[in-house]
Length: 342
Image (tube, rainbow, N blue to C red; front, top):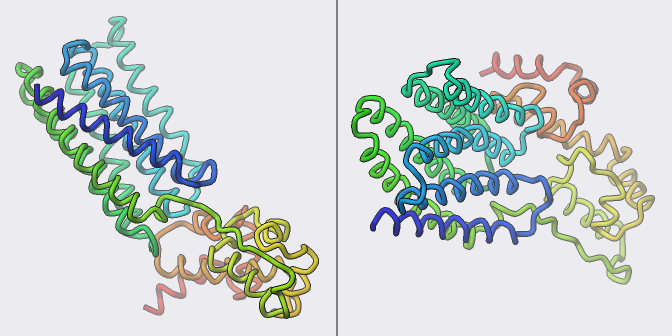
């Protein structure tokens, strides 16, 4: 009875969290998408667990189902961490496909009698996958500076980290005692669901009290001609959008986007920037990108390519060219100089 109740509570909390996230104002493809995918895995997983403890799903079927879902946690969690820190994920998305395909290929070969795979190997497989990605996520969490969302990063790391640790413990327990698999699965699933329920409750509380960690809403700055009396006020509108909201990190940023946000004309934006900074629009934007790039080069272990995308450049060559134009050295040389000066 209690396993079913705890599972149902965890499932309800997961569905509530998915609903809250889905209505938050956020741009398509942002970090919330990855979190929603993680939660979708969790919801499906919890549904399977509820069917298992209710006697609807056979334990052997649930074991395969659970294993295939758990393997997805590691890669997706890592991708979410990268997205939360504003790092590129395009080159990392392909990881999930071979991870899952490899597992199901083993299932298929075993089922067809082509390859006899011991049960402990499956445990070793997903334990390795989870550990590799979780360690990578922890390294990212510790090495990349984060000004906002620290509380949420702590919660998500402890939450999904705890789930990963629980499954690693379950895999070790089953590997050591195959004769009691039924009892082990029931006990470990109940503990997992209880932990999951508490983690989700904390997440719901946090998302309600600090929604800024989950939303990429862009504040539209109202503009009325009668209120603009001089260039200083117009410049303040541009700076509020480009610098305070860090829109310069958007590789697609242009004068049209600024115009939509501030109400200023495209040509007027150029005039203001030229007058205030004696620079053209692109050089002014790149100045801020390079300034932030220096911070990342000094205080993080990210690669040059990762930093390039982080600060808003579309290519490493453009980044190198802009960086050298302002410092007379390459990003790699700058990082080396900083290391030597410590």
